[in-house]
Length: 94
Image 1 (cartoon, helix red, strand yellow):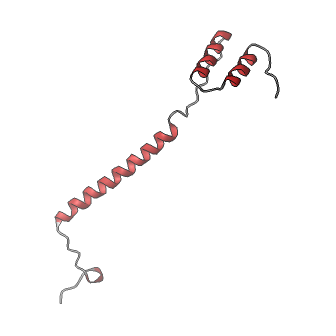
Image 2: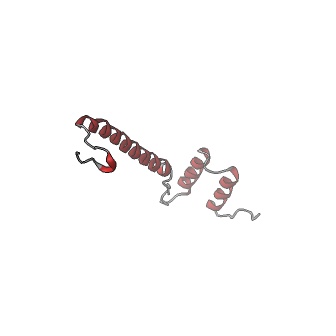
Image 3: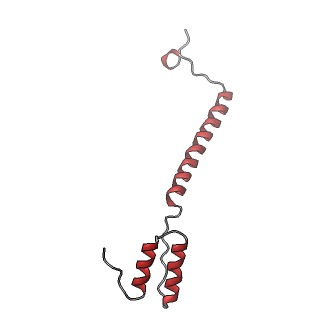
């Protein structure tokens, strides 16, 4: 009697079995890489803080503040309070 393979099964696969297994492995590996890239892009996009340099005039600060307000990054109350701070008076405490 010929010696059987592991658990009584003969594991003599022909070479053509390697082709679908290799293709399947490449597909799974591609999906894993795609998922990691998608997660990294989703968690890092738009998260970089833009901090303007203080290079002088109040006009530049006003322009930056107006731009943030126009893009919807701050409410009208926040805009008003920030302009008051920029121009030397503190906003009223609530």
